[in-house]
Every structure is written in structure tokens, then in C-alpha cells.
Length: 107
Image (cartoon, rainbow, N blue to C red):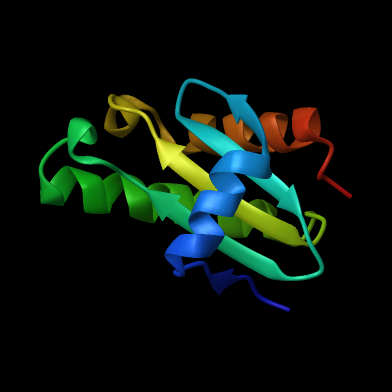
């Protein structure tokens, strides 16, 4: 029961419009309840060059996967904030978990 990648631009815009969101130090988390399980990690050019963007996306993805077993079904998008590469992985995990709790999507 793994999360699929969200890659359709229509789905993205519906998430941005309809989802609940929570801002934290690392990223903005969007959560849209759904019977599907999808997730995406987004890092814009503001975050940095490709190397940094890929790094922060990997970190967010890894942190998400760690919590994902405890998450309700739905569509999740995490938009990286600049400076994310300075934050320890441990802190990213805690931050994400806290955000999901606030959004009410932790089982």
C-alpha cells in the first residue's frame, strides 16, 4: 500500500485549491482526503540549483515514507522551503509528523 507519485497537473491544481495546508520550517504540507494514496514533493528554483533541489526532495520523500504507514489515505504534496538543506533529517521528520498531526491525517 505504497504512495504513488502525483504527476498530473490537474491533480496538482486541485490539491493547491482544495487541500488543507500547514506551513512549517521545512516545507508547506498540503493534504487532500481521498481514497487514493498519492504524494509529491516539489522544490522550486527558489530553493536552489538542481543539486540542492534534488537533495531536499530526497530528504522530504524519505521523511515522508517514514511516517507514511501512519497516514490516512489521501493526496499529499510537500513544497520545500528554501533553507531546507540546512535542517537535519531528524528535525525534518519531527516537523512533518507534527504537520500531519495538525492536519488531522495521522491515524
